[in-house]
Image 1 (cartoon, rainbow, N blue to C red):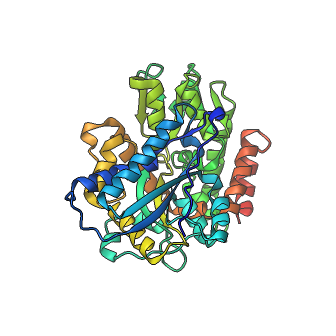
Image 2 (image 1 turned 45 degrees about the vertical axis):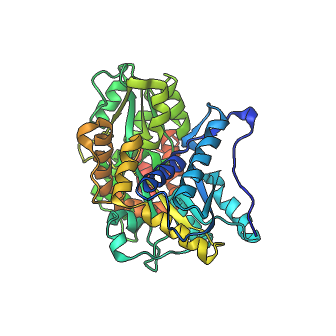
Image 3 (image 1 turned 90 degrees about the vertical axis):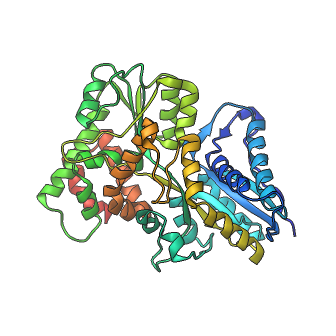
Length: 426
């Protein structure tokens, strides 16, 4: 039975739009594939596949006509039909935070998608809730992908929850007109700028603040805090130093904290902030507002090390309700996505992502933005063990969020928070 079209857009009155990063990127590599195939395709693939694109809250636009989004989705479908005349692609878009609820409903009626382009954290959650299936790929195919990315997607049985497609680094975004000398290279310098009238925006969410951990020497302590052994005095000191910096920042007149990352994006775009941490997927909307005034740089570290950004991966997870034929089509789409030439073109087409294929170097010589993204990806490698321990542990993340919030609102001293944090995480 043919499943109904499931396009999801905000009501006209709300003007809430989505950033079609995932859709446009996949459409781009499909178009590239089309250019390499003769017009008289001999493809034997036949059928309809349904691709869900999860949209993050900080990747939504509040302007632009809905017709533009619909046109992009239709172009995606049309390009793939030219490559495989017997295949139709239906693209569905949902806010990522609503995806679990939507998939549960569709699983009950057997109308789930065949593919899902989502964050790695969402892919792990879908697998935990039995809302996605495992798809195995040859070792030579997986060998092309950065090992850390695969490890973050591995389940306890060694299988992969999804296949990486895009890497979205966390970087510093700033207004060049307000910071003509560029982004600060240390956390101390960031505080100093706030005292000089530069308006800095930070997130209250731990995952968006984690980049500050490395420069203050608290990464090892956070990892140890989740274990069974007591922390050393040096590790406790590292936690206290990190929490003290956050509390100090919260007391600065030039620094404001926001609980939603999208507010930071909007305030930088509208000129109400001068410096924020952001995701590379936010660069397009910021370029539209700031133009050449938009600066992009590596996040600042400190005396105890480099920044520890959490780079987000967009991955392809596989649905439960696919027929054998649909599984074959979904598998080919996912496998082709990590082709070296496809990965290169994904990178240079919009300058908003890095390859997940480790044999595809980003052209950093021609782009300072890509150079900043590559340095961020390198910095994130030292944070990988902590990311792995925290990102799949909702209770630990919630406990850490609670402690950080109490420190920011001065309900807890940094010293007291550092003492109770290990027991709270455990």
